Amino acid sequence: MKPFLFGVALALAASVAAPVFAQEFKAGDIVVETPWARATPKGAQVGGGYLTIENKSAAPDRLTGGKADFAIVEIHQMSSENGVSEMRELKNGLNIPAHGSVGLSPGGYHLMFTHLTHPLVKGESVKATLNFEHAGPLEVEFSVTGIGASGPGGSQGAMKGMKM
Image 1 (cartoon, one colour):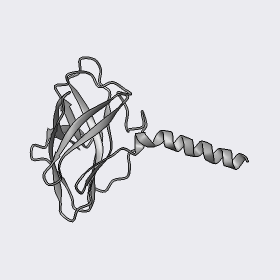
Image 2 (tube, helix red, strand yellow; image 1 turned 135 degrees about the vertical axis):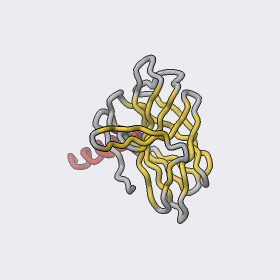
Image 3 (cartoon, rainbow, N blue to C red; image 1 turned 180 degrees about the vertical axis):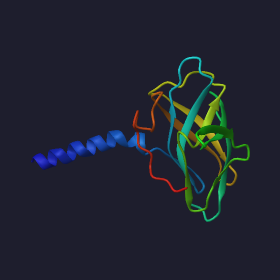
Image 4 (cartoon, rainbow, N blue to C red; image 1 turned 30 degrees about the horizontal axis):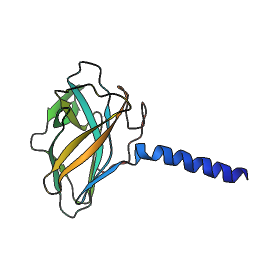
């Protein structure tokens, strides 16, 4: 009887945790997985959005930008050379390879939410529309985690493995 109860408890725990880690949004052959954002302090003008984009097509696609009612959405890249970090906007978008995926995460490619109209609050969610060159627009909902979170599950989080 105990193994049965353990199995039931495990299944219930997985069903409760699944929405945090299993968020998936689709447009054509593009799949966006586990979008999340960090909470921002009151008065902050910028925030960050993170996710994984998978392209199931035999042709490459490109994330060209986005829009949201709470901020301007830009695509950025962080890089570090000789101990100096630099962030730049990718004005021509971000290539998503055919049959490949690209991860947007802290310290690398990410969405920059600028000119925030309100703080991003832990436990809430915000919606943005991402634009793809071939797949078109895709509305995505970002779960907001803590200010210092490194992933969608909270302070330590977990990002799905990604191919670059």
